[in-house]
Length: 285
Image (cartoon, rainbow, N blue to C red; front, side, top):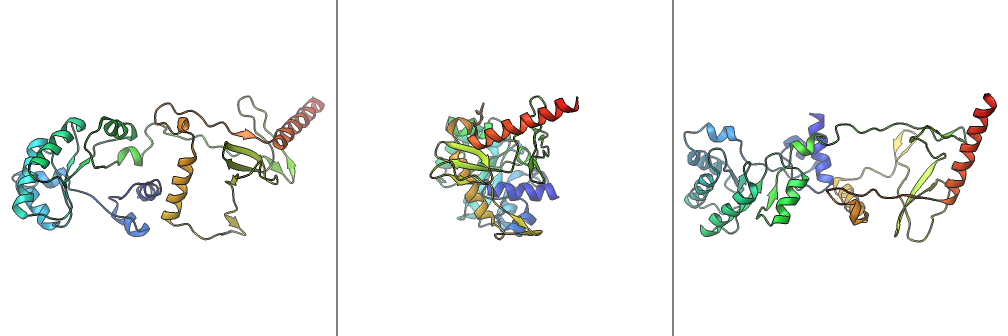
């Protein structure tokens, strides 16, 4: 339950327009959206009857799930019900399986031929960012995407290796020298500037004009400072940070790592602390 709530919250921060999680929508003030289940369709004697019942319950916003039996036949049944009930609110069909590129084009042709150019096509069915990107690049006439499983679980990176490292103790900078795991000492600040990010010491001045500090105080004396940001605040910050990424780092496939430069003061402190640690190691031997 907690994971589903967190997924709905995080999806809103990074630009998703709605969630099917009703409780999360209530808690965070999000738009709630959804269609029907395959089980709803199969509970009726025929598909048209199911569509008719659903539309009567949701006459102002109706999206028909059309692939329970035969996708294009489902589109025809949806068109039949739309015309029979004279639905005027937002309407559409949802494709949840099969060749979404081909089916969306055929569904668009059928809807337009029926005089329903405003009807939307909604695609879902285990989609991830690569499939969505591919459909859009191919020009598939899909108006919206539903992403659930690939958002709510980490299929590509099942774990994130996050480790606590000590960099200062009682005012004394400390360093770890393990191969491929060496650390830089001292309290730090990260600056985002026109030419990229710069890592420096906490008390240093900005490395140049138009550099924004990324680290700020959020807790003091056990209390949050600066107020609690809203979902809209966090989404604005996310969009700002995403735009700041170099194009090569923002690619979906084979992104390139951003190189974070270090200030001279941090480099000097790192060298001094490393040498001091090695001296202590040699003297102990």
